[in-house]
Structures are given as C-alpha cells and as structure tokens.
Image 1: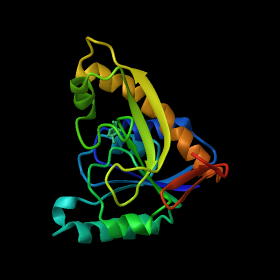
Image 2: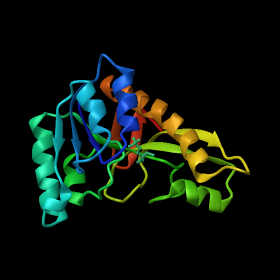
Image 3: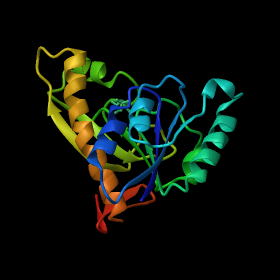
Length: 200
Ligand code: GRF
C-alpha cells in the first residue's frame, strides 16, 4: 500500500508507523507544512523522502491544498495519513481523497473535538478518555470512526500525564488501522465505515 504521511510537528505517530515496519505498507513520503517539524528527522533516518510545503508561503487555503494535492499525487498515494497535521483542509481536498484520507484525534469522538482535548477531558471530569482513528469527512473531527482506544483518567492526572497515556494508545491504533487498510479490509460508504463488510 502506497502511503503518504502528513505531519506538522513532533511526529511520534509517524515514528510508530515507521517502527511497525509493516511489510504491506510502503511509506512513499512524509510531507510537513512546517520546515522545522521534528518528525522530519524520523523520516530522514528511515530514508523516506521528505517534502516541505510551507503554508505561510501560500495566499490562501485553496492554493496551499492544491500544492499539497500535487505533491501527494506525485507519490501515487493510495492512503493519506494525517499524523499531527495541524491545518484545516478544504472541502475540495477532502472530497478528492474521500475514503483514503485518515486522521487520529486524541479523544473518544464525538467527545472533545478541536484542540486541547486532554484539558477538555480533565475539565469535564470524565473517568475515561482515549483516541480515535477516523476517515476524514468534510466536517471537522466528525463521524466515520474506524477504531478507538481507551485509557482511564485518574483524579490527580495532569494534562501531560493524560496526554502521555493517550499517546501510547495512539501509537498502537494507527499502525493497526493502516494494516487493515493495506489488507483492503476497510472502506467508507457515505458516513458508514465497513470492516470486513460489516458496519462498524
Ligand atoms: C497526537 O496527539 C494526535 O492525536 C493529534 O496530534 C498529536 C500529534 O502527535 N492529532 P505526534 O506529532 O504524532 O507526536
């Protein structure tokens, strides 16, 4: 499976996908919208081509997304993986990759959309939190859930402790979902996700 991974920063999910070393998964390129993204070093160490498309150099989202699309398509990606990619994508871009564009979000969606999800979870006083891998659809952090992982929230947790606990789960979820996709076990029809032809 030809995969292109989009990052903006630390890249620990990228590293987890690289370290999984799935023989069915060919990471063709890593694209960052930030020239300084730490995660680029993981790609370089693994000999994966790196591309930088600096969003500050583009007049608007549409032109940035067009450049992104051209770059992704040069690698003939069958799956586009958002791994800490901190840009909102245009509906046109999302529509183009519908069913082959996935994201990981650090909460049990539909709870805690948007940013600072661990802070949101602590403020809400939930006892369980986690992460969600989902197909990207035009609504931000919306439905089309593929897989979730859960962690307990302890009463004295700091935001950092909770983030670390969730991150460990993220690093298991993402390689698993990409493996399923490579095995052609996953598909999106409308807003419905199917695994082995069963509705999730
Ligand atoms: C992760 O928590 C992910 O769920 C969210 O952004 C963070 C990226 O972390 N979308 P990293 O760059 O993969 O370390």
